[in-house]
Image (cartoon, rainbow, N blue to C red; front, top):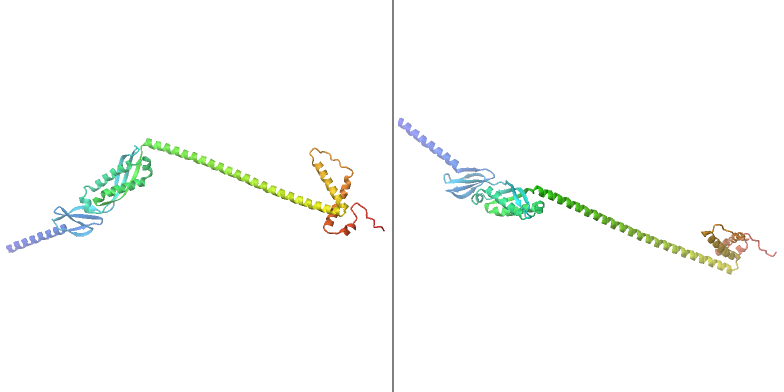
Length: 331
């Protein structure tokens, strides 16, 4: 019995040892990789493969995990540093860089201390790019600086199995005295622009005023030309009317009408009186006694008009003259 018990204990211990070894081997061979990470596997010190997220099996005691690489995009602060620009201005600048590991094996075995290498490469290229530009360009062309930095750093880090996605310059701080000089320069530029704009406004106002005066002169000349044309037309019509009246009077005189003669004489007499009355030196107008007879002769105007309109000689003879006697018929 004692011998059997010893044998059972020995077998039980052996089974327990085997079970423990199996559990140890299981834990050594099964590797669970979390999402966002890749593990590199080294067999006897040499890289063999990369474990992706999920459940993976390796050979225990032969294979081992070389590095656990974060495959997510990472952000890295670029500390502030002094930079001398092309025009010898001393500034301080800092920034931020974003990168992502694409190949875990290259990021592990192609460079030592990946983050330190990327940081130093970014800082040196920042000094190189910003040092090749003037201060005014640095302050006004940040997008160009970011693009140039990104292109240079990404090309330099591509053998390391990473992708630099963005590099941003956060702050550019010139010295205080340089900032004050820039403020004075900006003020002078604004005052210059204000003077130029004021002069341009005055020039435009003068041009518009000259254009307005020119247009006014043109319109006045056109008005005078139109008035002269109207006046000439009126004189022409007056002359035509005077000619027609003279023709009518001449025809009436040719027909033996004494009323036409009276009208002609009275018309000239009245025109002479008007000229005397319009004289600026004439204060008293002396009318002769015969002026009363002129008024009576004006009645001949109506008779001439009726004769011109075709009332006939009979109608004119049948009417007694204004202020005259009825002609004797001989009865």
